[in-house]
Length: 123
Image (cartoon, rainbow, N blue to C red; front, side, top):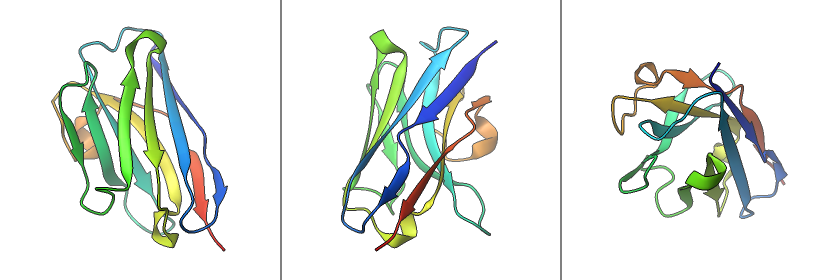
């Protein structure tokens, strides 16, 4: 059974950095597009970034462009989200997702989801 497991969340001060990881198991994800989403308390889940599994195309939400970097290690079946210059408004649970429909921003276009990792930006 396909599974995605996120890690790397935590508490960080504004301006700090974190790197999230998402490890896939249970199937091959070579044909899948991988995305990161986040959900803050009381808000809807929102798109953060996505990358093709082969890494030739990337998409970012405007709110994180220039601060976050998505990447993947095919050998490790892992997708990363490097988050720099973190802001208070980046506080959320971050989810990894895999889908087949391309670099999409709608959560409904993704087939597999991890359980999420909490990122808290606070002074």
